[in-house]
Amino acid sequence: MRFASLLALIAAFILAGCGAPPPTPAQVSERFFEMCAEKKYADIYEGTTVAFRVEKTAKYFEARVRDMQFDRVKDLKWQDPLINGDIAQRWCDVTLPSGEKLTIIITMHRDGKTWRIHEIKRVDSEFRHDLFAVRSRSDDTLESASKSFTEPVTMEPPTERLMRKMVEKTLLEFNDAIKAKSFDEFFTTISDRWKFRGMTAREINDDIENKRNRITVPMLNTAFKPFIDAGVDISGITKAEMKLVEPPRINSDGVLLAEGQFALPKTRVIFKLEYYFEGGRWRLFGLSVDLKP
Image 1 (cartoon, rainbow, N blue to C red):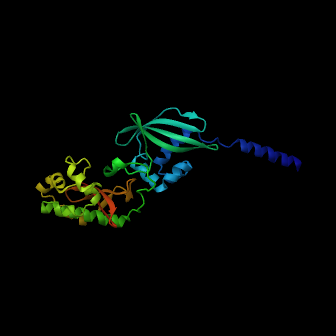
Image 2: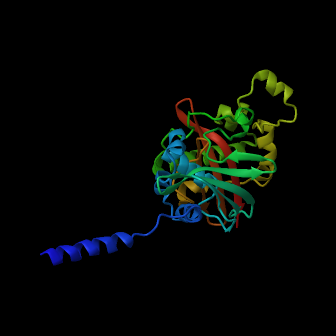
């Protein structure tokens, strides 16, 4: 019995020595992008530091990863990690799907034997921006883009069925404006946020160059003049299949995104729509409509 016990004890020591060492900072940083590509957002979030998770929810984290297109990067060029005690940093040049390149720094803290991601910053000349800080990044609030504990990703996106109804309604109202040769009526359906960008009446009057990119009736009439001149009619979408690029989702600014197309007999209607929750309902915040053979 004593011999059997000794063998069991030896086996236990051997098994204990076979455990894989904890991931290094290099492995942790590289695994971040691998898991983003695998859509394992919740797992990545749970592997961050407590301080990181205190300021943002898993829902906001996922929205921000997808906004940054970190789940679809084309190329990564890493530098060796710089380790100073319980803190490690690693620089990386990231190439996004669009071809845009950005340099980031991933900061990791050691929690016991485990390295956890604590911060990811973009290096822009002499400035460094926290890519996951909870702040509004939309044009109407750029001047007040300070940290906030109020996340914009608080709403649940509508069901896909409701989203399809919203898209069809918007495009039919757009079609009515084309037929009427005026976007006056269509303008009334647009969100106040898109019309005013959080500006006061005085600021609007002083903003001669429309630096906040507020939408106006003349802008709509000008942008879609080719549609009006060509007598475009997309009313056939009511009988066509709508193909969405992805299920309804809300980005890290709290904007609901809808992108897809309708295949009509002679043309494809390609749309990109944005909505903002205002006055108890989703109202139009962005519009792009294109026709392709």
